[in-house]
Image (cartoon, rainbow, N blue to C red; front, side, top):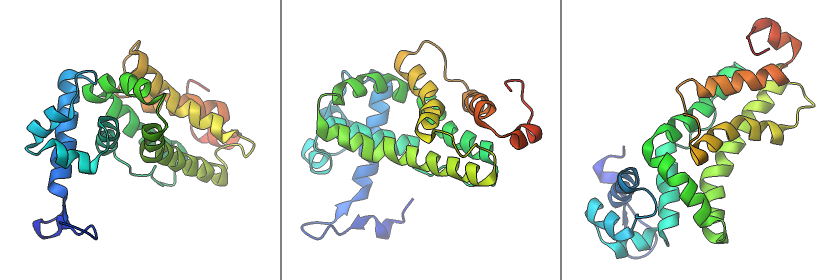
Length: 211
């Protein structure tokens, strides 16, 4: 967390933006979503919980949908998929950030309603893809290319399809809630998928019952 003397960041005009308000609003947003879900979520309630005003929130986020997207980004994190030198380890670590976030009540309760809410509105949909969806997908794509370079993944693999396979189980369970998002889900997904796309060299080093 930034020290107290660096939180007021000049914006180029007017008063400096106080990032303590941003942090309080994002934290209040996730707490309210956990408590009441997306349908009853209001900027007025966020303002009260965060100790600020609705106009102050509006200056930062043009709509509640934009605010919720940023709160999800903050909760889920935006760290890239790591480069540990181990292809399946990288992928498990990357997918685990997704499964951990969706296992929380706030994220699981908001996800289906948010997706439906932004479906017909290009502005928040663009923000959703730019802030949340695309960066995570790009980081995983980079990890897959490293796997190809290492000889762990076949070079003729359809990376777009593989990216969908790796992430879709978590999104699917978050949307429909038919099965739990377990602590081992990330590893289970990666090992099943790798068993289907891995080279013989990778299989020889990492035997697995799914193979």
